[in-house]
Image 1 (cartoon, rainbow, N blue to C red):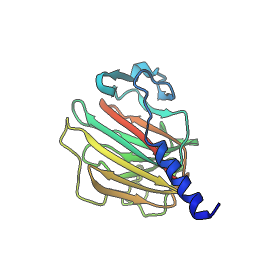
Image 2 (cartoon, rainbow, N blue to C red; image 1 turned 90 degrees about the vertical axis):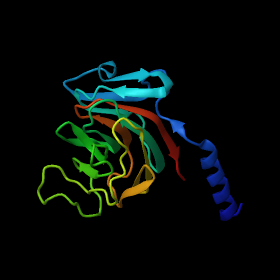
Image 3 (cartoon, one colour; image 1 turned 30 degrees about the vertical axis):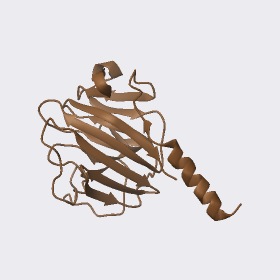
Length: 209
């Protein structure tokens, strides 16, 4: 079999796999909660009609998949269910030291007014320079395009492509950030609890070749 034909078959196989819903719509199987103080998933998250997942925003911590992923497109929709605040999508969650209650991971910021910023959490790193002040406690690479977050109460659409250590973030159709040589380049996927309630829906992952 030629290399070209093999590549075509592999591409068709990946495409046929399609997007996978990371929440099954019935319960939180495949997810685990890490918080301080310790809480149950039922304390922090609930399922609503039409596939909506509601987060209480507390206690501080994160909900993460039990499975790890590498090379994927992640589609996430979120909105503030009340007063806007802070939150984030965590990529490449890996074992290791914590930054306060946050694991080794790359955070895609959903904080109101800063959506699309990227934060290397704990031992995570990437090649591009930070835009935060040297030595600042919170390390940030700010989003590069004008703010594209929807008004409070409306659904935001975030598409994240992660491939071999390169991560690109598009928010409501606008490319907002890109980093390369992300370390680690694979891991679990999660959502932060930072004190503010929010809602999720259509959390879908499409494997890439």
